[in-house]
Length: 625
Image (tube, rainbow, N blue to C red):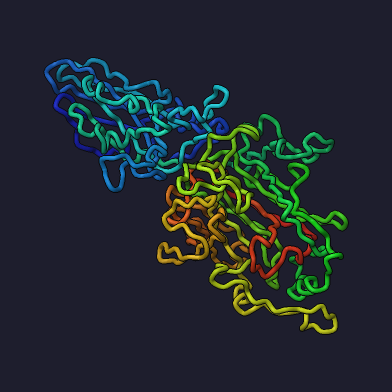
């Protein structure tokens, strides 16, 4: 037979019949396809109607009756994502299905009630060609948990990116009667556990059937995704508390609003941070053009020493009161522009800004090309901004639908129930919350348990003695004055299941690099590694790349000046942290963190002036592959 790339293979033959030819993608000559975002809010379909004439992948195959009697044959196709999957079989016993294989993304006919299709009766010695088609869709098993009020929300289990395999099974009537119902109909499950047809036919009982042909092609297409950032920003009104007030839509425009057109087409929304009251800080009442050369280390030290608490401004980090004011979709250059707005006297604010994608994925290499705002000025003082690129679990319809996007059960201790709860928070078997972060800011490079805190010189508020208040950084902090910390974090909600789960600081080695992974305590919900890098490289250059490589058993963080020149800066695997397995969205933010979250930071948010000019960031490209 022939594979999709024309490579000739040996005929597959049983006692009674043979598969003499198989041609895949007869209507799509390429081996890479980018997901079409048209209509993707209802779920991606691969291919779309604009990518092939019939919105399907066409294929054909030829079977021959090798026996001396007429034969009735039947066939069924299956596809599976091979890039982001667990092995089909158990690593210790290939005759058993892997315990997580049911999580793999595989499908067959879109209507799961379509079992094996008939080839028709074939006379002795006759060859018969069958032509058919299929497409890859979300929720391919038509699982009930992804339905809402009778609708199949295929977007809740979108197709994964990466390589897809193709398997065709051809069988006679006798063999078909032996195939279990949950292989014929992949929707059928026992206790939410599905039987993988790829395990069954390639490694399990189906492998030994006499009159059954199984043809497996390990890669017939590679799928990627890249949203068009010039398609606009959709505004979810429920995210704004003042959506009913006059003036709410003052900044609406044709490319940023809440109308139905953008709801269908825009791949990006405006992200609104949750602000906890504990984030309040007493800020110096000073506005400064941070990057004009006038704000120095000495100036910072003066503000730190001479502003008393009663003279400061008690503020929380703020979020936009009106949508579209601080985010812009550029239809010409196909980019998203973010800006933390400048501050005016009497209207004291440090305002966060961000964007969030609207189409979720499970696993993938999420690569962002961006020029986010610089963090250090010419005297290497931090402006208080954290540039963050992160993934967050996807919610359901509106604000209240839950239960469809839960992580797999944590059977050892369970997860901490809430993101915000403390040590006494209840533990539960399943949660929806998941998060994977790049948080890039000015803090110390080491783990607290290794060397913490830094020894900063004491200062005295004595105006007539400069050395009393203009103290220097300790040497181990000063050596990194040009660098910022690239902090790589996985929020595992303190699930104790990983065999090397622990609190404190311990080493993780990958690709010859040693990382120091830190967790504050056993009930702390996240683990973090750090990498120091020059601010001028990441945010002083024309652009930079940031990549979160999220796989079923590990997460790798990479950065670099070009997409083909990325280098590894963080690594966490499932031996130390529970890796998320639910569907997530991508967020890019510039935010004013409370530095209490990062003990040891050489600069405190409260001593950093309010911005005299906007801090602008631009996002040029997002790819998921």
